Amino acid sequence: MSQSDAEADRRERAAEAGASPAEPPEPTSVLRHPPFVLYWLARTLANIAWQMQAVAVGWQIYETTNNAFDLGLVGLVEFVPLFAFMLLAGPAADRFDRRRIVQLTQIVQGGAALVLAFGTATGMISKSFILLTVFWFGAGRAFEMPTLATILPGIVPTSLFPKAVATNSTATQIATIAGPALGGVVYAVSPVLVYALCGAFWLISVTMLGFMTMQRRPPSRAPLTLTSVFAGIHYIRRHPVVMGAITLDLFAVLLGGATALLPIYARDIFDTGPWGLGLLRAAPAIGGLSMLVLLARRTPDRGIGKLLFGAVTAFGVSTIVFALSTSFVLSLLALVVLGASDSISVVMRSTLVQLETTDEMRGRVSAVNSLFIGTSNQLGEFRAGTMAGFFGAVPAVIVGGIGTLAVVAACIKLFPELYRIQSFPPQRREPLDDAVVGGPMGGP
Image (cartoon, rainbow, N blue to C red):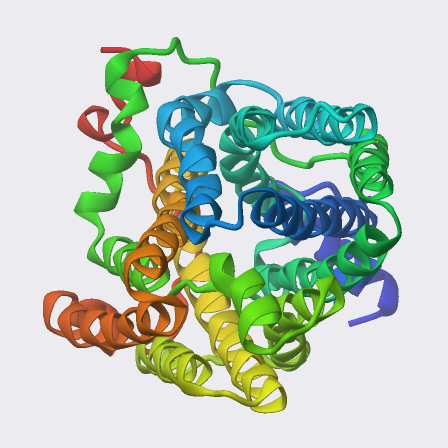
């Protein structure tokens, strides 16, 4: 066959597959895909701002009240809007322009940071002022978290999706390294400057997203109904792998999270200042980023279920080691291992949930996923802070680590399909029945 005949045959096959013969070949790396690069940079900046603000708020409120319970209260106040609004965010992500939703939510979060800067500069800052602003911030994240998750499958080819998840997760890990360290150092210079930088970073992220193009749009402009709001829950219940992955992460984070208590460890146990808090918050990201670099280069394709459960087990064990340690260096190492195991869990869970979900349901399923996973962070902080207030920080963290191991054992028994899964599934494309999506076009 001549070269011209081969080219003609290629064009004919492309036309039969519904692709334009003029289309460029798919990139072999997500880093050569401009929409993904813009998405990654924007998410990195937004996450750095979030981490910087978390350090500043945690240190400021503990310095103001000197009460461990108030550290947990910050998590609870952020949880309330997440719980109230996130199920509405899913249908919104399936109906409207997902990029615009994220931009609006980041403007809200940037505004909250600037309000904290103003309050600190004018002396108006107080416990109530901080908590009210955190509630405002949480309302923005309620819509941002599930919508961000739905954007990724729309900007990268399906063949690159597992690597895109791993590479995308490096944005969080880089931010968790740079954000707390930067936040702690800058806070020591000026608390006002920390919040001002956070606001600026969110606004830059908004600008970057404005230049990003999406290749796939939400499939319908279905009317918002009560049935469509809860359709994500019904979908998850029908898919044991998705249900198991979300449940495992939900309860592991709810019980095992100890980040709310890091100000206590930094000041009262290790006798450091804000810089020590920044290092403690950055340590999990160092381990996480190292693991994500490996996963981005070579994503596991065998024994996915056992790897997921093994990672959560390591998360629980490292939590217990951190709780019992009286050495700052050993505690940092334990947090590094914790972050590495958490990164494996995040990549496995996120890839399974996204590939097991059809695009027309992705917003609503992501909303439920973000509701459970995201709010478990805030409730986990509240649990840790409440227990620390009654029993002390060390017992609170130990109980969380033991609880994580108990969750692993329970989920192996409850979700054997997830434990036995060997490889990532192809992306689901089959049509859904009306009972799942809430009637034709999402209606009743």
